[in-house]
Length: 62
Image 1: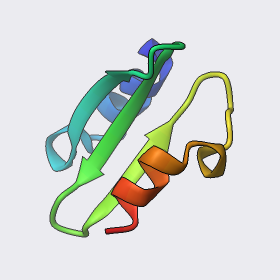
Image 2: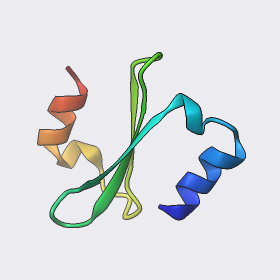
Image 3: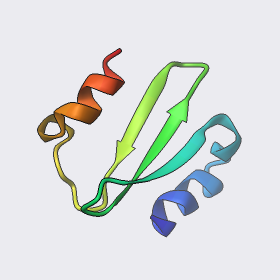
C-alpha cells in the first residue's frame, strides 16, 4: 500500500481522491475514490479479481 500512496503523492493527485483502506476480513485493499469523476479504483496488492467479490462489485456498480 505504501507504494500506491507514494505514486499518488509523486503525481500530485492525492488531493483529488478520497483514499479508503478496507479490511476484507482476508487482507487489506485500498479504494481510491474520485468523487468528481464518479470513479472508484479498487487496489488489491494480491491482485485478486474484483469480479470474484460480488458484494463489492454490486456496491461499485450502483
